[in-house]
Image 1 (cartoon, rainbow, N blue to C red):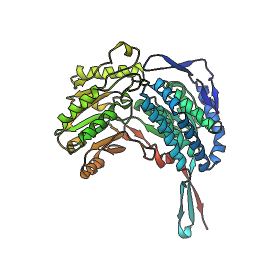
Image 2 (cartoon, helix red, strand yellow):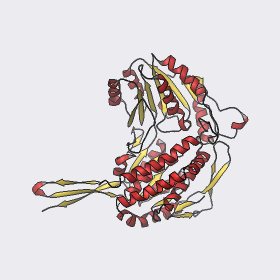
Image 3 (cartoon, helix red, strand yellow):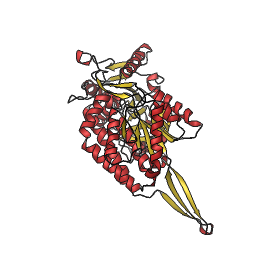
Length: 476
């Protein structure tokens, strides 16, 4: 499969290729070019040439095109979802949800295209001001492998609607569905050069994109180490940044919670996409009064989850995306027991059986007796491992929730509005859910505090991040 530059397939300037491997079977899915600095330069030049005409279109015209692209994504959602499962590993029903979610995001941005972005300010005798928002220019987007289709929608939708052009670099292990969707934008009538996709490694293609002087903004979703590197590389030229750098989301279950509903929320919140979600439940805190009942039901249901190839009907959890990702989780679990930082309650090993040998499968894992200063609670664990702790009161739960350096999301499960208010006021998080977790419709601004990054995606807030104000002052 080839890159997309200037609206056309491009095999790249080099001869190197990246193999995309099915994480459930170990089989080759496709090869994509290992994009070079020259490929990135060509993509940026293409985007720069397209910017003038694209930015001069009305927002309504740009929105209509996003709507047509969304129609094509919905038309092809089954094929796109199957490809996503083959390259990323998630169960097919999750892949279908993700592809439809991307279409939903594009539809949302198409729906707000008629709203004016600006304001009029009357200054009396001093005159009047018209404050408008204008696009930044060529923008860069770097997509992770865990939710590549949804996150493509988060970045492409507001960037293009705002009048920017875009160079997108997908993850090396999951670039194929991004390329297919970019092709659908071309089919929908997107002018050449407005959206360009360069495949390749972060070290080469990613760094070339981040350092390019004509790229006015970088939107990156990934780990904190890379996020800090991007901030360093863009600092001297003052490029705009959106950095979503992960989280360690706490889930707090109060004594008055609906236990059955909360158990289902914990399972979906932790084991959806094999736990490879930035806003996954990564720390579960149970009130002492309901902990025993909760754990009985949670353990039974976790042990009943069907792990396997995401294309097989009935699969609840697929493989981890890569052997390296599986090995990281195995190391985390080994260190739990080696350092006496918890007790494995269930799981804690790869899935046995010949049919699992070639895949990156790991059992859903619950960990109890976790001390407050354990590494499992400090670091982001990007996989199907859930530590469970108890607490006596809300103040203690909030204090424990805030011990992490991250501040992406958090949830509280309760029937009491006073509890909700107290939790929302004091917990460190960019988004707080009540009696749910993970839900992120496109209308809702998304982003974190502290080590979880800077900036917001989704909603009108994303439009703001892809534009800057320009003021017309009328002195009468």
